[in-house]
Image 1 (spheres, one colour):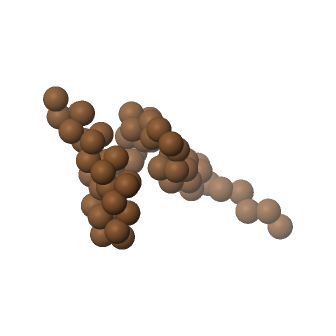
Image 2 (cartoon, helix red, strand yellow):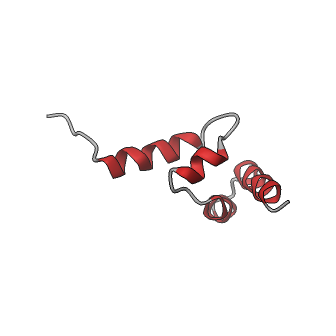
Length: 64
């Protein structure tokens, strides 16, 4: 039996998928409900220095 994702599950999967892109579309990520601040925190917590740095750069660009 196939599991069909709810709209919320589909949206959450899209948000997770965006984080795997070589160029993360941060505007779309936020439009879908993602939090760059949360990504940075969790990436640091899990030792993902690359993703943490990418999120930090995106946050700096938004604060200008």
